[in-house]
Image (cartoon, rainbow, N blue to C red; front, top):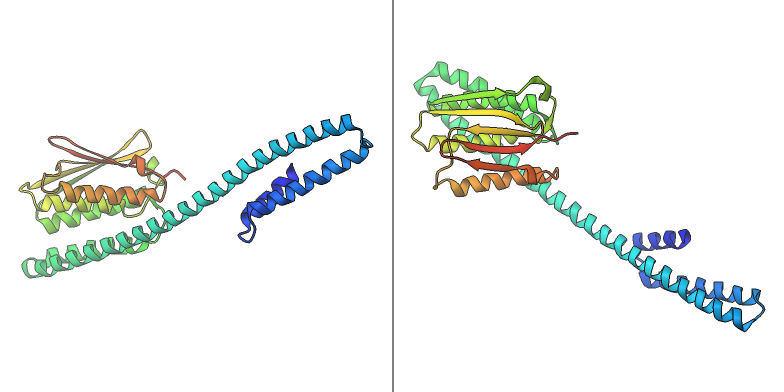
Length: 276
């Protein structure tokens, strides 16, 4: 049994062989087995009949088992191949999204900085310093598989301060997360996606103040609560943002943990921590 399984595994791994070859080898071994037993019993018809039944029963049982085993191995191999292809596609899509986010962020920030230099040079200097710090973090983390939650929160703080300057409106960020979670992993630039989506909605609204609260739920999820539910006009773009966030988490098999909730006064985005 172990010998036939080893032969089967070798056949599955080799593209130049097929299951038909295994069947021929298996039937040949069965015939040799039958012939040897026939010689041992000295052509006794009673024993030969029993040997035939025994041999065909063994052939049928092992054949069915190995056929099922072969199908499962082949199916698992195909599933693994498709999963690897999906992972590669998601990784390329993820890299494209990250590059696009960095480019758009830099473009908008530079345009805003040029206008701010003319209005308030001192404030423009503060904006450039924060912009430099944020860009340094974006470039350092964009190619990493994981980043620490503490580093993301620090960058989120600077990102909110920069948005407050650019939007000329108040952005209040409340981080209700203990230091125990600072070294927990999450995918890079997740907070940038969440905050950037909210800042775009905030820029198009008539509100003068945006409240953002970040906290941990059940020690497994990060929740970002904002005081600006998406409007009907922004619902389509908001859904695109959620889909992009889910795609990012699909690289870690955590897509099911990404969710959103809108109420009359608040908007919640929840995404999982990556343990490991």
